[in-house]
Image 1 (cartoon, rainbow, N blue to C red):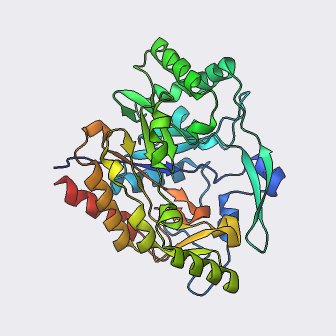
Image 2: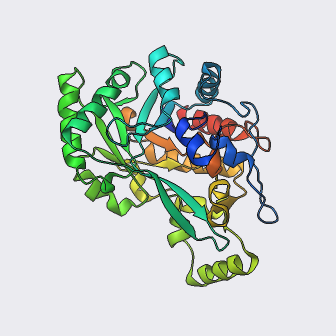
Image 3: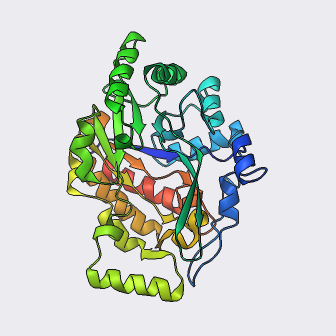
Length: 365
């Protein structure tokens, strides 16, 4: 019987202005810019999404960060996994909120880091839903000296009592593990540096949308994978007839990629999620159109009740694992531009969080 589930929610820090975004997108740009200008693209499409309890917040404010942590803790979330950016040569972006969390000691709420090791692109979608990309900030891998600088920049966080650990090691995720050509050397070096600095090591997790990549990722030195089956249904869950019908419908009616959440959620969980070296994902909702327009995917009718069933399925997969590995990642806490969040909105309020808490309580008795 499960006694505790470790649910960790991905956390996007791009809710405050930075000079680079001012230059690329206009003065004052934050994630709220895309959220606020989102359009309703078809009948029944619920856009724009409007935040409720926390409002259109600014993550430079400690009061906001505390309110988020209080809300997450109250409903069973163990901690936040902050998206972290390191492009090489010490270049970082949107790091201020996390730096303040570490430096101030507040909020007193667990955290870990996921390195979004990907170039920042301007993704412009034309009227046909085709994406044209332009590189804004390139992701570089510059060798040992840069890897050491990166480690030292994060060492205060790794030593923080709030940092989430597995096997008493700080958990560190890499978003695209197989696109990092020198990742094995990176892991070996960081393990050495961790032990030199009084840590037992680093618990490395590689994220993947494809569980078939698991063994390849683990062979690079990773301890586990986080599998995100967000588009598993779209890619593999439909018949050929259904795929053809959906394609014609999208073209004729000029639609984004539209599916029902109840269908997509069937493929969010897989048999491998009960394995010790797999950390499954929980997906409350999805609507990428604020960022991608007609190129976005939409999962309609992501109700709290369906979400609760999805959470129950994930908990069933992790319940027999050792307690410190009884982990699932919630995608996401506050990815509002992707319509992917647990924070309250005007339609459902606290209902998704309450469903999460209710489902957790039922399993933890």
